Length: 100
Image (tube, rainbow, N blue to C red; front, side, top):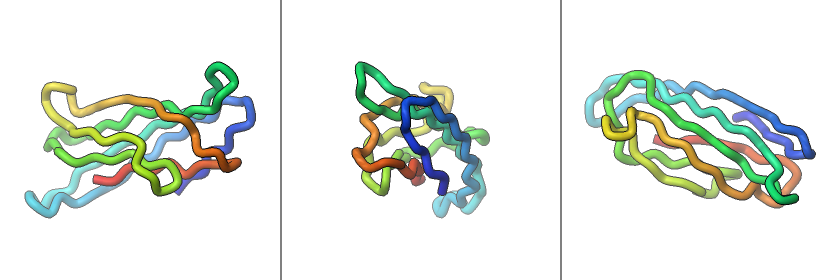
């Protein structure tokens, strides 16, 4: 896990996760890029999640400190990538994770 401290500066992190699809029993790679930013004096985290091997996955969750803030799916229609943003947690630091 990577911690993202928001202190007026923009931090960018990229995480690549190797996962195993139980249905297809084949591995795929998920990439998460997240940036902490300040918008109108409020901290938020922008993120992009993508799948390198286009197998598709209907259940992707982006979590801040373990709380789901966004759900999506990898499909051909979205080119196996999606982006979003959500307010950063109030504590001084956030763990951003993706679950498939």
